[in-house]
Image 1 (cartoon, rainbow, N blue to C red):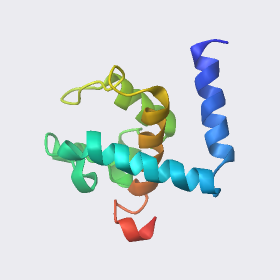
Image 2 (cartoon, one colour):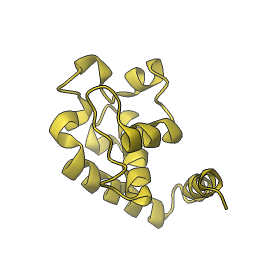
Image 3 (cartoon, one colour):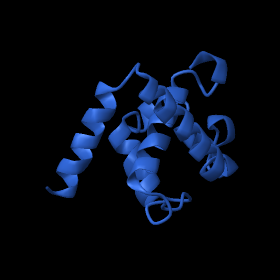
Image 4 (cartoon, rainbow, N blue to C red):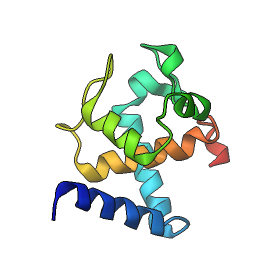
Amino acid sequence: MTNVLKKLLGFSLLFISFGSPTYARSLEKGEILFQRNCSVCHLGGNNIILPEKNLKLETLEANGMNSLIAIVYQITNGKNGMPAFGGRLNEQDVEEIAQYVLEASKNNFEKENY
């Protein structure tokens, strides 16, 4: 099975599990991974390097980054001032961070709302 098909299958399984205890644990793990790896630059969904490229939903939408695939790609490969994390994090960790970012962005990273 090609890597593309494996990724699509993984995303499909992630979508199927929304609302389940597994999904909630995945979000919690994604949040922990985000805090450990991303919050130095993206605390509260902000961006200390390029403030206009924050992780708020409106900004993600404006930049075509409001999908799991786009966020996974960005985390894995980096861009501009953001380093690539593909060599530091495994695919599952990257996907959990991406899911957390997408969910948290819907409420502008205000924790009590997601």
